[in-house]
Amino acid sequence: MLPEFTTWERAGHPARTPAADGVDRAGKAGPGTATRGKDEALAPEALNGLPVTVSALWLLCAAGWAAVLVGLRRNVHGPARGPVLFAHTAAPAAVVLLFSLIGFGSLYATIALAAEWWALLLVTGFRPERLLSTGGLGRLAAWATVAGAATLATTRFVFHI
Image (cartoon, rainbow, N blue to C red):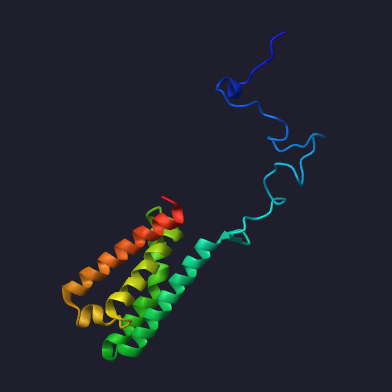
């Protein structure tokens, strides 16, 4: 009698063994077998299941936001101070909400925000009020270019594109 081949084997792939299906030779699933789930060790690059890259990105985003906040609090005076600080404080939640509404996740929003804030700090020399007060269109264009390049580079790094 001829052996029965599955579609998988007809396609040229090796025969599946019980160990490849996550079952040991005794027919039990558990530690030491190819099971997926709570018995597997986390990847060494993960912190409690969260990739280190994402954690670092969140830290960079928070640090950039805080640095821009410090720069705005220190250098913006007069009647514009209140609205500027309110807009900066509301920006993270608003951007994450916007990205959620248009179908992207919060990771894309975090990448964009981190890139924009660090680009703003680099272009203005850690004085964010310079972007509009003394910068003109040249500084605004430089900020947009640096932010776009940083967003593209970070997205490719995080998503391995």
